[in-house]
Image (cartoon, rainbow, N blue to C red; front, side, top):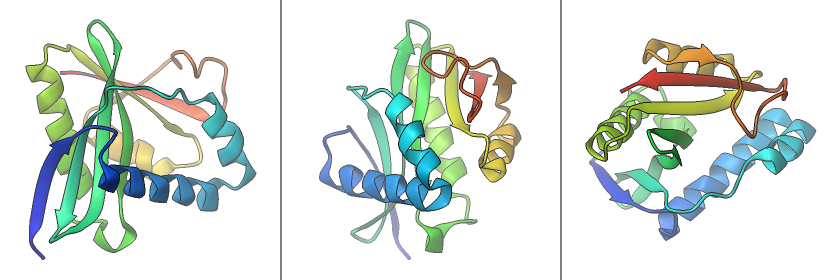
Length: 150
């Protein structure tokens, strides 16, 4: 396994493909909830994307987008099943945090689903703290929001 990390944006074809795998994963995991859940997520532009490749195969991704002047939102974190539990998710999050800090942001926020306790635990181990749901997730009981000071 030869890993390569690439920084790109939301228009990258490999990112688009692996992001579709993430959507399929959510659909399989959450069923009808995923459709309602996806409808509340905004379509942002100007993503900063981290892609991880095994040779030429994209195996993991993560991204952030500006949420407000001092805060970015972590999005699209996904590692293909065969590559999980090898620290790739942590590596991606750390790269995103580093780039966020370089770009002058003070905070990183994220939203995950209440039916994904593994994700909540993962982010907690990376020092993300539970917060009140932020827009557009205010009042949505399926959402769990978290925040970290960079």
